Image (tube, rainbow, N blue to C red):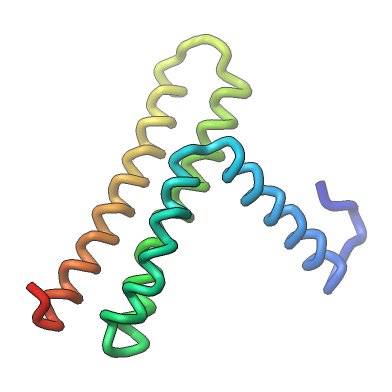
Length: 124
């Protein structure tokens, strides 16, 4: 937790440390996040190779980064629900299902971007 009184670059520095810790925790504890990181490895060179413009490359890479961002948010929601919801509760299940649905929509969006750009470039 950030100390009161940290401002400016000091606050930014601590925020970056906490963000790094969050990424490390997600890598260690979330299998879906690890898989999405591994998928990113071929996504980046493929996007650079197939995308003809910087905008196409950014959309191809960014669409998968969006999946990873939504996965991080979903994992945070699940962690909070698991921490405070020891017993089964309809709202806990709903929160987890909605987070999962958000990941599904992000993946669908990424596929749509790739399909539309590949179609525009004449690969399909």
